[in-house]
Length: 570
Image 1: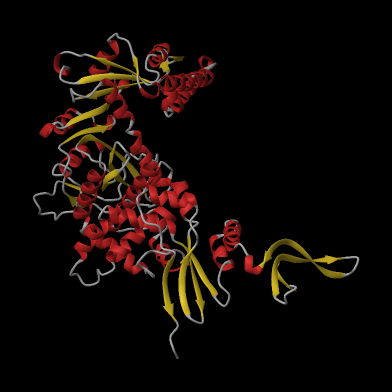
Image 2: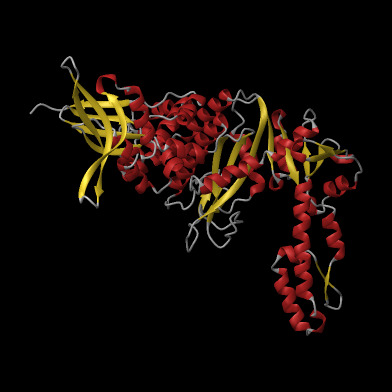
C-alpha cells in the first residue's frame, strides 16, 4: 500500500498534483499486477492535512506503541528503540509529591557514592509496581526495557548498596511519608487499621539464633536491651498455611482510605498479641492528635486495650464469639433489635455491666454471610454424617483410627461427639450453637463518641488491610524474596510498601484499579530516532483516557519530545 501521485495540466498551463491511496493487485487473467485506488485525497495543494493526521493517529492506535512510532517516523530517520514511559512517569510524579525524593536526597547529601541513591530507590520501587522481579532482573529492566526519568542505566551492585542505605534512612523516610499523607488526606482524628501477615522462605533450616530486644532488632548479647534469642527467618504460625517453612512477620498500618502509612518486619516466631503496642509507640510522636486503632481478634488482650487507651487513644477490636468468653456469652444473651446500616449490615449495641461497663459492645450480622455460613455448615454436617455412618459396627481400634482422622479436620471435628462408650455421633448441640452465630461478629469499642454505625463500618474497613496484603503478594510480588541477609529482607519489604503506597494513592484518586491504570499507561512509549542531524527521543500521542489519568492525579503529562542530541562534527 502506498500514496500514488498523478499530475494533470490545467487549461492555463499549471501542473496540478493529485494524491491517492493505492495498492497493487495481481490479475490472474491478465497475468499482471494492476493498481487499485482505495481512496482519493484530491489535489495536493488543497490537502486536508489535519484530516490526514487524524487518520494516521487512528491507524497508529491499532499498532503496538513501538510500531506506531516507527511507522510515523520522518523520512531519513532510523527508529532505534521504544520503551514504555507512562507508568514510571506517573509513579515519579506521586513520589515527588510525597516528598520522598527530597527526603532521600537530604539523607544522601555529603556522602560519597550516594549521588544516585534517590533515583535508584525510585527505580526499585517502580519495578515492584510495574514489573516485579529480582534486583538483578530489575537492573536489566531499567537499563534495557523501560525509561526511568534521570536513570539511564543500573547495575545489581548499585541496587544492593541502595537497599543497604534504605535501612539507614528508614526513620526519616517513614516519618516524611506519614506527614505528607496526613497532610494530603487532611487527617486529624481518624481511624488507623493495623494487621499482620507472614511470608515464607523455601529453606531447609531457620536462621541462627541471635540476641534481640523487645522489638526484634539484633543487639549485643551484653546489652541491657537483650531479652531473647531468635532467628529472623524462623518457624511460626503461618498465615499462608506453611508452618513447615521459616517465615518473617510483616505489619502494616492503613488509613480508612486504604493508604498504607507504615510497615514493620519482625522475626518469624513473633506472636501477634504484643505487636500493636510497639506500633503505637512508634507512631506516638506523629502528627495525629488522636487515633482510633482498628484491629482483629488477635490483638484484643486486656494489656493491649489498656495500652491503646494511653494519651487519649481509643480502639475498635474484634472479639472471638466462639471462644466462650464472658464478654461473648453476655453480649449474645442480651435481647434487642438490629438496625440496618450500610451494605445490608445489621448492628445492635448491647450494654454490659460490671467490669465491662466502660467498653461498648456491638453485635454485627451480615445476612449474606449468614447464608454462606449456613451452607458451609450443612455441607460439613452432611460430610461428617457420611463419614461416621456405620461406624458402630467397626472395632474399637478402627473407630479410634477414624476419630483420629476426623480430629485433623477442624471443620468436621467441632461437630463430632464421642459417647462414653466410644461411639461417634453428630453433636446436635454444637450444630445448634453454630446456627446462633451465623453471619455474626462481636466488636469492642472504647470511644464513647463514635456511633454504632461508625463502629461497625469502621471495623469492616479493616478489609482494606487484607486487600493490601493480597495486592502485596499478587501484584507487587512480595514473594519470592531473593535475599538472605536480614537487612536486605527488611529493605525489600520497605520497597514493596512504597510501591503499594503509590499504587493506593493512584487508585483512590482516580477510582480505577492499578491493573487498569498500569495497562493504559504502559501503552505510552518513548521512541528513539537517529538521523543525519543527530538523535532525539519522542513519545507516542496520548489518548483521552491517558490524559484523564494524569489530569485527575494533578500530574503533568510526559513531554512530547524528551531530548535531542545533535550529531557531532567529524
